[in-house]
Image (cartoon, rainbow, N blue to C red; front, side):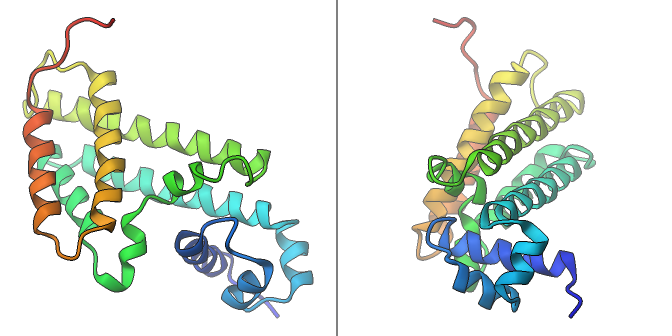
Length: 196
């Protein structure tokens, strides 16, 4: 039987995103992918090998979305829409409000070295995407020229991660939207001038 690689990775992503690496057993993987154990091992070598591919694809997709934000006519408006879309999805996709990478960081000690490296490299890739957004906002006149790019990008990524956890716990979107509004206000604000 021939399996579509993208379809397999999409199904595995949903499984790992919903359950986490540790909780997703081989039977769960077999069922989600509709593959026999021998086919899974022949194609991915291990659960960790499959997870690594999931993480890499997730990071590529996320980086592409961040690039679209940076290249938008108004990067700041596109950033707001990016946050809103990621944080206020329908209830049946509530698990997607939490970042797969952050969920994976909680399991770094058990996912294996190859997958661990993929998770950490993916977080750096996304940090670069946030930096590109900050630079585009400055270039577009939507943020002050003196905005410290690296610091603002790290702060923005941390806000996004925190809001993902916050949004996961909300029954409705009003509070999440208010928090997104606050992030956008704070992004335009003052930044510390020196480090301690």
